[in-house]
Length: 346
Ligand SMILES: [Fe+2]
Image (tube, rainbow, N blue to C red; front, side, top):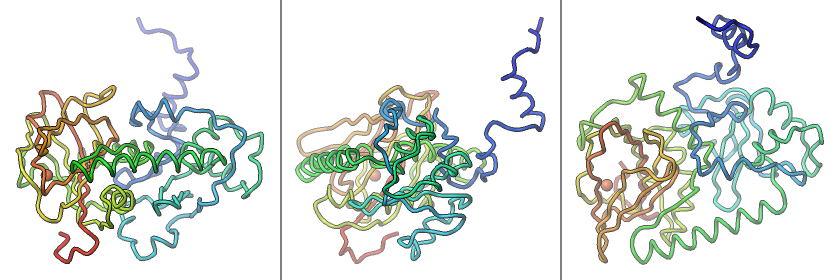
């Protein structure tokens, strides 16, 4: 026999289903086939688990509005993007977007603000303390996104990134490959997972390409292209020379798909393979490693969600075994060439 209806949360949920107020009141106003990263209603189940542990820190009392944060409403964009509007052509440009600029890498990170966070952030003033009334959870989310910073966190993040890129550069320039973590913010990883799952499930990304009939594939998708540009500077540091984006490829593999051993074409002189999604949800690394034939022997690289691997795809043969039964895996391949490369970028 069904239990009696006496739970108010359940009643609220049912009211939402029947046309009342939905819990995801803001996300429901966004077109699902557009990219957005709405901080008020983050799909926390899609944030990589390793990042969630780190990001659930308290926002602290010593935070202030990041001077590198620009608030834009609707289709207004930061100046840097004025000549690259095609990169945001699939963004849901509505409401307030906080664009956080990283002065060291010249990258931009867009975070959408719903009514709650929007009312907090618009009322903040540079160099003024955050009001006591701002809840700890809101501080924490805003600090994780880099919209709020502390004097310590700015210096700490810079040092951490420089050290990580320094280690990666040494390995890459010596051996032709290097794992890269934290290239894309974990909130954006979650938003990208939601976005590409939506495109695949609604038939917007075709199944099968010249290399495999068991993968959905998208060439130069504008959202992937946006991140392609944002991480270019970091890859230049790793490569030890200036690079420029050539093309980007998203591939979502079904069980049985295989990546046969191959080397890449000249447009892939420097590449990053980003592990974006996997099912069943892995706790840490996925069980589908990429293998590289390096001069010193075969290297097997296991990646967790959000991990990147920089590699010289034109020099090191690379491959994956058939994907296991009941598994799916999604990667983005970001390809770059030397800044003075004069050939086709397609
Ligand atoms: Fe390849």
